[in-house]
Length: 631
Image (cartoon, rainbow, N blue to C red; front, side, top):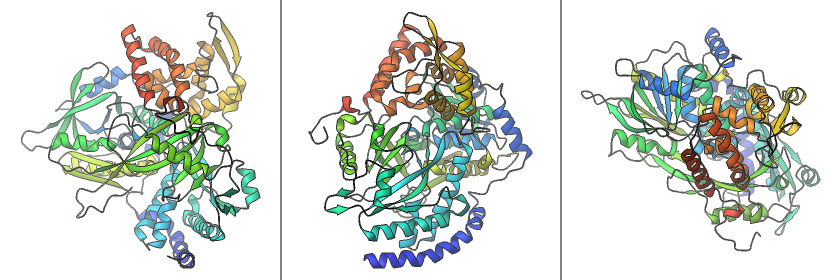
């Protein structure tokens, strides 16, 4: 397609987008997967339960006991397998509809794909391009869907999610016009769900906003940039927040609990429960449920095979690789996105938790518990970003590198194999087993809603109300303000224990206060109180704001059961700086030992497992080889 034709088609499609935007509200409300019901009192009751200042999550022992007591005569309404974003979202949706819910997760909440995401809450800008050039109304509906869910996600977890401006460099005037028109149409389609208006910046303005952006590349000069807004999140903390919020609302959630087999009714062959193994104690028990929801992400085929060994796979795993670089690679508060590199892949650099995350590659992979990035994928990202920067891009600057498995799904009921997409699939191939897979982080809430709707139909369940998660803030979000950190800075000190054992006061500095406020929301004061009252105010790693008090808090309030749970999912130290995480391990294990009563053998096991986990993150020290190109 010629440049002129592309611009004409883009311009012609603007009129259609205006009409769609004008009726955008109707489109969203007419979509049953998006229609929620706020029945007032029910939502208020749930909010009060979650935000009770004296509330504590039920202990692990209590949760396991509740699952054990769900026998054939007294089954759960829904048992969810998988504690990622979708599974935790299903548990929260179902329990807030008045259903009796259990959730089990083999590893930890968000231990798989959900903690290894791009950290972006996408509004579907690429779907819009496909909608325009393929004249595909289905793609346009996906844009509306993603934009609605993006806004709700930011509203429901404001401490963990925020708007992020993303800059797209343009090296000829056609690109300037093309991207500017496309993103203006995106603004128009967003309507009331708009985060901020997109705009064009000149070359000079662009380099002032993004100092490391190169003005000149290979035989080309920067003509300016177009900046639009998407959302950004602390993905695993959102996921843990979902699980904890579900637990406070009445769901029984248990991590490190693996489904080893499914229980079927002998006469009807319907799935009526599961055999579960506590992977910490080794104990096995049965849990019965009217419906089992399979939300195991990339591993959903493994669960389907427990029901039927001959079932055809529906997951097409794709690898997404990300690397973390020092903060000087990108300015705070501005990302860089290149929609199409030399080989057609998208590459981005985004500020995240005080560092720069860059990626991503998209390639076929095999499903494994600990996916590792290949060195050539890391080199590809370094090569790609070096084309757009005026600083030397070095392999030795890679603080952490990880790989995540995206569960692209095919619908088993589809007539052809061309149905692989990033949209989600809900199906019940085997009576009593509802599978939800595919999709993306941004749409986890509506995916969960669709899965619960299917489970209600399958089990003929009787919810007390319709879905209310559209307007339900996660724990720590209700009442949080961006200025909340000032209370911590003004009212708390960090009591630090010296190597000699003496406890000395330290300042609750702005960096630590902001970190706690954003990580824990309105519950940050509880963490600050532990730092102050229990002498756990020391930083875990030099140059990072994570405090010892967080380890104790997460063990008590967030089902943090292992050292890896903390370094990877409760804090993000493993993702930000693998070597710093390794140095912090002994102290983290020491605090968890005090909280959980571990013996010497368990402590040794925790250290070994954490080191194995960190070895899969290819920081500069873990590099498999150096070719000299980026040293």
